[in-house]
Every structure is written in C-alpha cells, then in structure tokens.
Image (cartoon, rainbow, N blue to C red; front, side, top):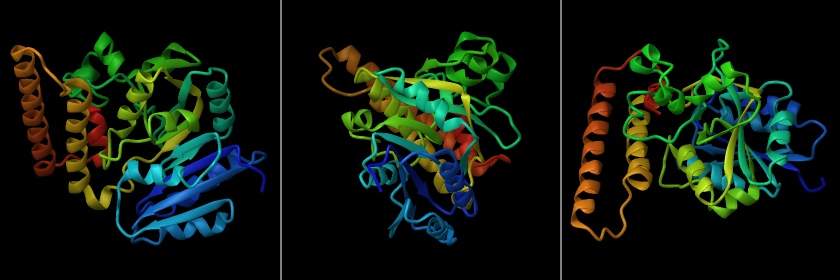
Length: 311
C-alpha cells in the first residue's frame, strides 16, 4: 500500500455493533483514497473490537489492558499512523455520504485551519450542539439543553455557547468557531503534533474544547462545516458506567476551568491571587454540587447528554 492520505482513529469502549457501522461508513467515504485506520480498544468486555477483523488490513486494532481514557487513546492511535490528515471519530458515530470530501475541501482551502467538523445529528435528525463557544462560568446556565437557553435562545450568550444550531439556521457554509465536538473531526497531523495532541489529563469529556483552545493559541483556527453530515448516537459507551462518566465529566470541567479560565502562574498582586483562588473555589463548589445532583437524581438522559447540557 502506498503512503496513506488519511488516517482514521477511533477509541472503542463497548460500542457494540455501532463500531462496525462506524468503520463501514469510513470505508465507504474513503473509497478511492489511500487510507489507514487504527482502533484503540480500551478493555471492552462486549467483544465489539472483533469488528476490526472485517476491515483488515486497512484497519488495525490496538488492545489496551485497561481503559486509559479517550484523550490518551486518540494520541495512542495517532502515533500508529502516518497520514497528513487525521479523521477522529467516535465508534457510535457514522459519516453520511459526501461528508469526508466536504470536510477535506474545507480544511485544505485554508492553510491555518487545523480542524474542521461536520454538522452532527442525533439519530432523529435534530442538530447536536457540536460547535461551541469557549466554556466559562455561565456555560452551565446557557448550555445545549438548559432551560434558560431554551426559553431565551436568541440571547447573544445562548448563540455563543451553542453556535451550531444558529449557524445552520443562518445558512452559513463555513464558520470559524471556538471549538468542535471530538465525536467527529478532521484535523491536520502537523497541527496536532504542534500542540502535542490531546491533553491526557482529561480522561473523558472537555478534551476537545481544550485541544481547540490550544490550537487557537498556537495560531490556528477551527471551522464548522455544516454541509458535511455525521450521525452520532450519544452515550453508547458510557451507559454501563454512568456514575463514572458523570464524575469524569465534572472532573474534566474543573480541569478545563483552572487551566483556561482561572489559570495559575505567578500573581504579582495579592488581590489577583485572591480572586483566582475564589474563582477556583466557586467552580469546585458548583461542579461538586452539580455532580452530586446528577448522581443522586438521575434524569432520563445519557451521561453525555447530561454533560452537553452544561458544555
């Protein structure tokens, strides 16, 4: 096989038959291209990783003895590939016909574009909130499924926090956004390497927001391409470990907050240092309370949906 143009990377954890569907959609979309794929299996117990055999030798399997998390799994897969373009996709996601070609055009036309993401749909066809504004202290009030944002969807803060719905309504073709969902994104390898890939301190959730923020700090931008479509069945891998997923979401949210919103470093003035500590303490209290509520009063939603309500 000649040098691959595209490398698809997936991190699998008990995705069941959806992993096969994801791989088939990739194979269909990348037909005519030189491509490779790596599936990192994070110690699944449902034998879903056996689906990889149907796509060998294009697709290779890396088995981990334990669940190392999403960010580390993606980095692990990327290290096994060589292609200049990297398609990162969840195993419970599938590409709709024409998605890859549209994403590739959107990425390659702009030299400083590091990542492009498609319009991601729920299985019922509704638009997921996959293009977002940078999270801050108000994100918990104006996230994708919060009551305030549903009641007041036209507020600038509502549009900023969940941009994808409004971009689609406005009919825009390509839009620079703060960050994109890691459920499906096409990236330049050189850009990922420039920022050392995903931050492996994030076990699950918020690693995509962190990655996009660091890429933007390095001079790149990320772009939402609603003409490209993907379908994402939210929460398949986390439904068996709901409590752990809810805790991981809140731990990652706090990590993101202290890294980007209330960072540490040298504080020359006592007042600034006190304000930073107060912000961190408030964030910890709010997130701990929210985590307790979701653990003790679960709603009829997947952990990922709950996470997206404040993301």
